[in-house]
Length: 132
Image 1 (cartoon, one colour):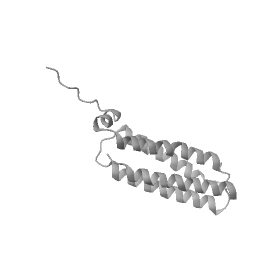
Image 2 (tube, rainbow, N blue to C red):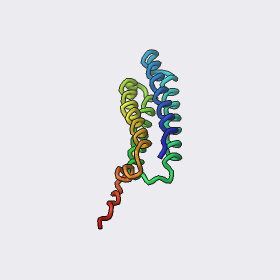
Image 3 (cartoon, rainbow, N blue to C red):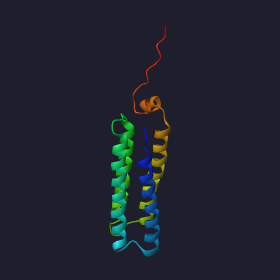
Image 4 (cartoon, rainbow, N blue to C red):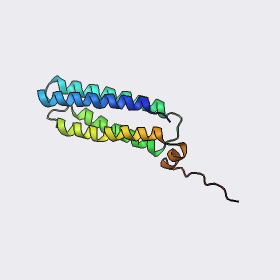
């Protein structure tokens, strides 16, 4: 399975998040910047989700797919919360990165895994060799 496009979009999201966080901490989380940051991050997350759906289509990943979907949902919650008045920009940024960075490495691991390993991780027992 290849997840390179998903990884690239996720890394783009993490770069944008770091840039917005720096600006929000410098300029303050009030005004249109916080709303713009939230909207942009949510758009980038939609791009990640769309790309993941395309790349994982037709592959039986079961629990692995659920892990990615939950991670993206948690990242969406943090991104949406940025637009709320009084949002803790530092904590929300840390939450988003604490989920997003390991997700990049998880996807890289999925790319590097052989089919039997993916089957095992997805909860399907590997076929044992038949003995004589």
